Length: 137
Image (cartoon, rainbow, N blue to C red; front, side, top):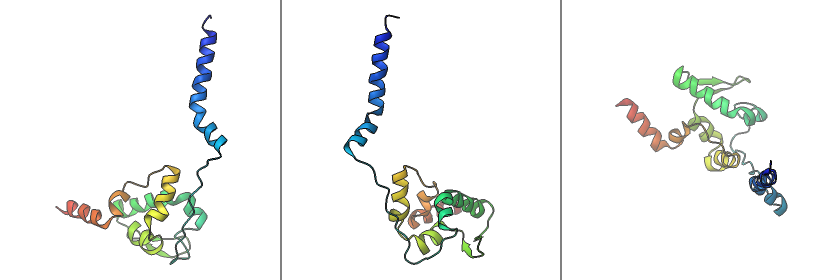
């Protein structure tokens, strides 16, 4: 029990070091402002209502991938009856959100999340063509 003071001191120092970034940011007033949303200029409505898209777009994209790749479904019918081609680059990034860096990447970087790995190839048409060529060999 003679080490009680050392243990307490060590814990205080440890907690101070671990929480230092939070206290520093609070004291300096630095906060990372959320990125400003860049809304599409050429489309007025999305596949789903705006609030649903904000909350559920990752699930929608993964569902689209499942439908297109595994089930060979070509089109998606939205709840309001409109039909869309199931294509990230052909529908979302071509018709509405034409600048991936401004729309997708800014929020993903701010939230420190990655998009689906299929975007690694299929957003860049040159890489997508290579993947298609590789699969047909």
